[in-house]
Image (tube, rainbow, N blue to C red; front, side, top):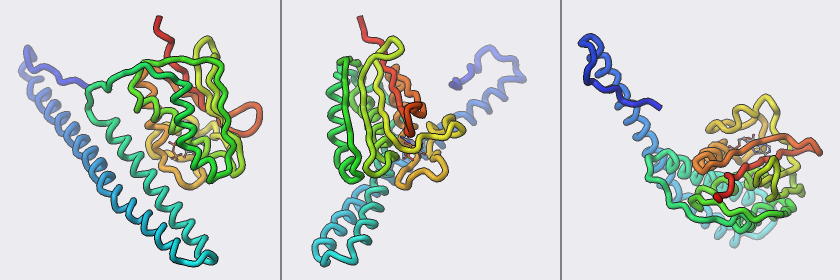
Length: 255
Ligand code: ADP
């Protein structure tokens, strides 16, 4: 990363250049900070009205006889859910970008965390009639801030559930591979074209033609959170059929 150059002991010709450079750097930093705050404030302001719209739709639905309007209501609700998802992703992202004191670490039982993550996402699984399985043959404990670990696994499992076909299958497996603990999240969706593998972690990048409903931010958020905690995410298309395998390499256990 860039650091300020010291003005001390510089030849006279260079000093003004260095001054100008430091000045520019400060402006760029400021611009980023302003942009981050803007995104954070905007997302935060959108939260409440979006929740209100969701409630209004629910109320209206209760007053309109079922039938022709059902499809429209479903579409409206899907739209609100999508907007709410995007708002939450933007908030996560701007929180990650904020200069921060390191969050408190705690000893986290990965199996417990994964089970919580899966059960929280059951609403989505049920809506898409996706069958979710969990298998764990080890019980690793990782020292990390819980919200960061949740953001890694929630995003990967959420993706698996959204890209699996209706009535599809998602498996979460906690086991040992390549000599260390890993978490695999498998789905039976379309996978990711090899040509796009290098870009799926970029902010806002979505594979052309990917199923609707995403923001292109989930993997970027997951990767930052993983790397901050000594973990690595690897994506591979499955070789035993269609679908993606997202593998999280857990840090070696202390001791
Ligand atoms: P999104 O909100 O669009 O899912 P992500 O950052 O989580 O954003 O993912 C980026 C892109 O990577 C997605 O738009 C999709 O094209 C692709 N992708 C991510 N996960 C999967 C998956 N499990 N199966 C197929 N494609 C995926």
